[in-house]
Image (cartoon, rainbow, N blue to C red):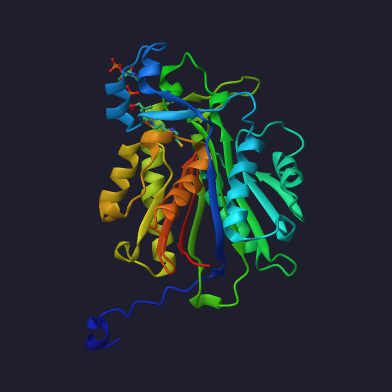
Length: 333
Ligand SMILES: CC(C)(COP(=O)(O)OP(=O)(O)OC[C@H]1O[C@@H](n2cnc3c(N)ncnc32)[C@H](O)[C@@H]1OP(=O)(O)O)[C@@H](O)C(=O)NCCC(=O)NCCS
């Protein structure tokens, strides 16, 4: 290689959609019951100030008896289908990301499919808090299959049912809710909307740091260990998805990270060099809703007009396993 060629500035690769997909609709649903930090102060040895400072969370939503995972998923999906102006029967595949299914068998997606009247295949996907971003990849990849033209991708959780209400280490963090997007096949190819670059990964050496031990009911967590692992995973996975897309942090119009802890998000933003005004943070109002966190954040951002057609969005989920999935995507219908 000549010295001249080596010194030439790199020509930025066009941000090509490797998995074309149109984002036709979005929606979210949360239970009506609000649990504030002050409410938790009354029952746990904790304080509003400690929770807000160490996590950024101020309140979360808690499911009532009727707020099953299926009910939350159906409510969010109805909004997304209406926004897409799509008959539910036009959905060929429903992927429900959840670690809190209503029953271990059958998949909660079966109930969701029946109640919505969607057609085709329906299954649950469990990758804990990375579930929705995994499901987004599965859904977009599904659109490459003849016969699959529309996909419903949902993240729905009742995490409060998995949390020991007397454990201040976990009870302060989690909340319930659901978010959904409707994907459609795209004729626009790599220049249109879709997934530009994906990083999927996991590290099973982290299983014991955040898990429900076999035969037990509640989550056990080594908070500082999960904090270290989650921060590292989010930074490295976002960097990998950007690199795979041929994009730089400056190309990102909106960063939609999993909403676990404001300090994890801040560390990622600072290490990647993303501008703070391009980050969606809503964990102050919902806490960590696991697989529902990214689609709820996406839906709120879209409702607030922060997602214009053509916007480049970096969506990252990280959770128990450890499991992570990051997608750089181009928004648009
Ligand atoms: C859970 C988490 C908020 C704890 O924050 P932390 O800064 O790591 O706090 P530590 O666990 O080191 O505890 C620091 C002190 O606060 C105390 N503490 C822990 N939880 C507390 C609470 N809810 N209220 C008040 N004090 C608390 C500890 O007992 C400890 O006290 P000590 O110094 O007297 O021993 C933090 O580790 C975290 O967010 N981890 C990641 C969790 C997560 O995101 N899980 C889901 C991943 S998808």
